[in-house]
Length: 507
Image 1 (cartoon, rainbow, N blue to C red):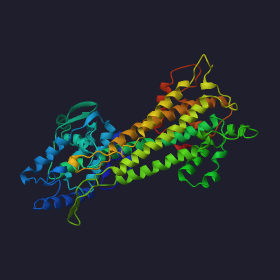
Image 2 (cartoon, rainbow, N blue to C red):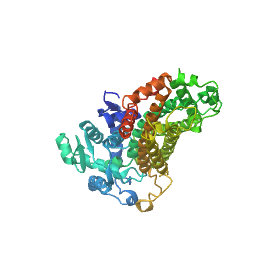
Image 3 (cartoon, helix red, strand yellow):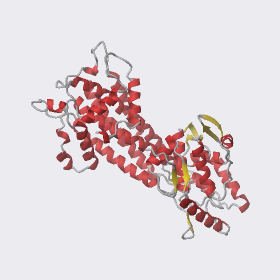
Image 4 (tube, rainbow, N blue to C red):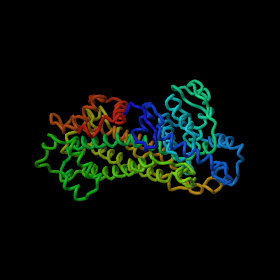
C-alpha cells in the first residue's frame, strides 16, 4: 500500500486508495484543484440561495416535505435537524474499515465541486480520518436510494459534535473525540447536511473493500484448483489453450492459462499420462476454467461498476458552476451498485461451490488411480482425518446459496411514496461481504485438503507454482500425522488468503 498521503483533487479513487485509507491509516489531504472547484460551486449556490427560487435541500424541506419553504434564518437549523432526524440506524456497528472507507469516498465526492459545500466541511472529514476518529455507525437503516441516509447521518453527527465515535479502540462521545484531537464541531450551512448524507457512499465503501478481498480470494482459488489437479491426479489436457480459445470467453481463457502456469514442470502429470484407464475427470476438475472463469468475468464487471462509482458525484441537486445551473436528479440511487453486488454474491457461490466439490471428490478417495486414504486419515478408523472439513465447506456453501437471493429485486417505498423505488443496495453489500468471508473459508479448506493430498504423491513434485502454494500452506499447517482440530489450520490459511499470499504473479 502507498505510504504517501492520498490527495483528493477531484480524481476518481482507486480501489487500493480506499483500502489503504480504510485499513492501513493512510493520511489524506485536500488538493488545490478541489478547493478551487468547491469554492466556485459554493459561490453559485449562495448566490442562487438569495433569490426567490425554491432549491431543493437549500431552502426547502426534504423528501415528501420538499414543498415546504425554509426561511433564511432557519437554513442552518434545518440542516442540523436533518442530520439528527436521519440518524435512525439500528444493528451492530459497522467495522472501522467500512466507516473509514465511507468517509474517504464521501470526501472525494464532495471535493469534485458538484455538491456546493464549503471547503471546511471536507477538511473536517479529512481531519477525522487523519486523527483516527471513527464515527460509530449502526449497520442497518439504508434503503439505498435517496442516499445511504441513516448511516451517513450517524457519521455526520460526529462532525457537528454529537453522536458517538471510536478512538484507539475506545468509544466516546463525538464531542469528546473532537476535543481530544483539538478539533471544533462544524456548523452546517445551506445544503451541507443534505450533501453529507445524500449519496451511495456506504454501499460503495463495503463493495470496494469486498472487491479488494475478492482479488486475493480469486488468486487463492486458482492456486488451490491447480494444486487440486495434481492432488487428484487429474489430467491437464483440459487446460489446452486451443480448447479455451475455441470458446473465447475471456475469464475461462485466463483461468486455464493461470492453471497451466502453476503446473509447469509437474512430474505428477507426467507420471500418469500414459496408460491411465480413466477417460475423463469430474466436472469440478475438468470444467474448472469454465466455471471459475465465468465467475471471474462477473467479478470484472462488478469491479468496473465500482471503479466508475469511485469517480462519481451522487448528491442531489448537483451544482454546475461553469454553467450557472443547479440541477435536481437521482444520482443518489444505488441500483447500479445493488445489482452488481447481488451478481457478485452469485459469482462467489460458484467459486466456493466448485472448490467444495473438489474437496469432496478428494476426501471420498473413490478414485482407484489416486493412492490417498479416505478423508486423508493417517489411519482410517482410528483417525477421522479431514472428514469434517467437507461438512464445514458444505455449510459455508449452503449459507452462500442463501445469501445469493438478490436484495435488489424487492421494493418497499419510503417517504410517503415520493421515494417509491428503492435499491436496497446496502443489503446487497452486507450479503456480498458475508459471502466473500464464507468463500475464503471454503478455499482455505481446499488448500488444506489439497496440500495434505499432495503428500501422497511424493516423491513426485508438482509444478513450481503449486509447490510454492504448498510451502505457504505448510508454513501455517503442518502435515496431518494424527487427528487434531482443523479449525486453527483453516483460520491460518484464510488469513494467508486475506493477506494476498497466493498471488498469481508468483506462479
